[in-house]
Amino acid sequence: MTIVKIRSPKEMLKGKLNKIGFRDHELFVSPTRDDVIEIWSVHCLIPNSWQCLCRIAFVEIPYVKYAMNISGDKIYVLIIGMKDPGDVFRVWLFEVSSLDGTYNSYTLDEDSFQAFDEVYLDNIYIGCGQNTLYMYDRSLVMGEIPFYNFILHEEINTFSIERKPIRVPKEERQWTRFPIVLDGDKRTVLKLSDTNEVFVYDGSIDTWTRIFANEESDLKLEEMRSARGISETYGPRGHRFSAIESPLTVYADHGCCIFKVHNRGLHSFYDFSINFNNRTYKLLKVSAVRLGPLVEQRNYMLCTPTKLAFICPDLVAFVPIQLPTLRELSFWKIQENYAKQDKNGIWVGGRSEQQIRDLCNLKHHNRIV
Image (cartoon, rainbow, N blue to C red; front, side, top):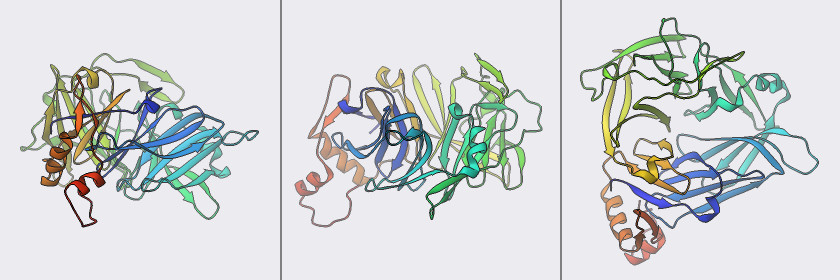
């Protein structure tokens, strides 16, 4: 099981697919629509398992962002849109259950109107800690990083935002890489300098600290070449970079952080961890794979502690970064007998978990995988 590619249904082929997150073996995505929010899911070991979890109708949606909590049972959707004909545009936050598609809706509290007007929406990333829903400007590489916590007022179905900016590092470095939030609850932020020096911000003590590779690290960032090919933007809201050219890319989702190094068509993935007491980091190599042109040309990557997902215009691809369990291997071996691969190696068809349960005459009600 090196890479599993699954074709997207025809209903999702028009427009961009937005990544949301994982719950166990299920990937959640949303196709871009002008007047409706659709959340879809697919089981990474069942090619024909695509299903629409929920649909939320609007008159017009000019802006939408998604997030999923670490446990995977809740999806958050931030929307600027007109819900009903003749209504005004409002800022909405939907909290959707990934189990059954039911949801609660909240509108922006009037006390947060001014704070929200200051948010640079085009570059905002929304994420979840264990206890906190947050957003931050991930394109701001120089200066104070805008960071906000969401606060839900369930009794009146409104939400507000609390501004908690991350201060400027004192170190005199050239910064061209985007900041990465590792822990939204503690506001732990990762930054790499142009020469791949690693700095971490600890929000609990409001301090930036430089950390170094420990002896067990499979990758030492300082030994890699610097980024180049920068497109800079200056404006009243800060100093931003729209693109960088580097073999190194950093991802953070679902409470984990993955570094990807691309070299001559081979993508190598490293799990990133920090020892705050020793001020060191470790990059442990967890996988290496050639994605192929269909996946490599254009994709959005999503990481979890056990697997990676590559979301492409007409397919999704999954790469395990931990050894599959015996159940997963057995399940996929049965699946291979019923699903089919096309000439590009994309899987279609297959059997549902219930069909495989019946095939194997399993009487218990526990999930197979």
